[in-house]
Length: 243
Image 1 (cartoon, one colour):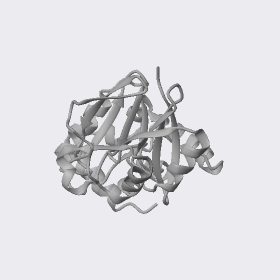
Image 2 (cartoon, helix red, strand yellow; image 1 turned 90 degrees about the horizontal axis):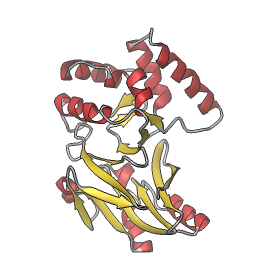
Image 3 (cartoon, helix red, strand yellow; image 1 turned 120 degrees about the vertical axis):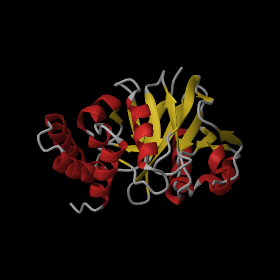
Image 4 (tube, one colour; image 1 turned 90 degrees about the vertical axis):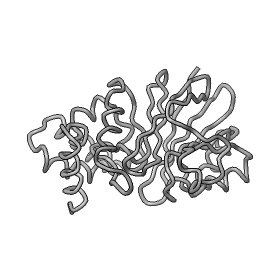
C-alpha cells in the first residue's frame, strides 16, 4: 500500500501536502496554513481527514490545524519539544519515532535550524520526505532560531537519504533560490538545467516541487557546503540577496 501526494497551494507561496489513502478513503495533511483548501479537497475526493502533521510552529504552517480538528475530529501530531507553541497535540513526536499512514511506515526526523523544534517526516517505501522549511529546492530555511551547526547537521542528515527521495518542502521559493544559487555556483551545469526547467514550470503556472534529493545534491549550494561556517556565510548572503 502507499499514498498519493497532492500539493495544496496556500497563502502567497506556501504548500500544504495532502497524503491520500485511496484504499481506505483517508487523508493526512502536512502543515495546513488554512483550513478551507483542505476542506475543499476532502469534499472533492470524498475522503476522511485522519491526521494533521506539523513540521514546525510558524503560523503559516499551523494556521488551519485547529479549525480542521474542530470540523473533522482528526488528530494533530507535532514536535514534543514545541508543544507549548503548537495547537494541542494528540501525539507529541520525538526524533526517531515511527509513524504510519496508508500502510506505509514513516520516521520522524529532528532537523533543527530554521526553528529549534523543527521536524521532518520521511516515508522510505513511498520515497517521500516532508521537510517543511528546513530544506527547499535550491535553498534552505532562514536560521530564525537555530545555529549554523544545527542547520548543517540537519541538511547533512537529509542529504544522506536515497537520491530518489522526493522532497516535499513548504514553499514555492525555487525560482528566487535558484537566482541566488547561480551567484554562488555560476558554472554548475546541473543548476543551470534546473533553472531552465523552473522557468518553464512557473511560466505554465505549475509547481517546481517536489524535487528529488539527488537533484538537490547536484544543484543546491546549501547541500554542497563543507562546514557550518561556510553554510552561515552563504545563508547570510542569501538573507541580503535581492534578485
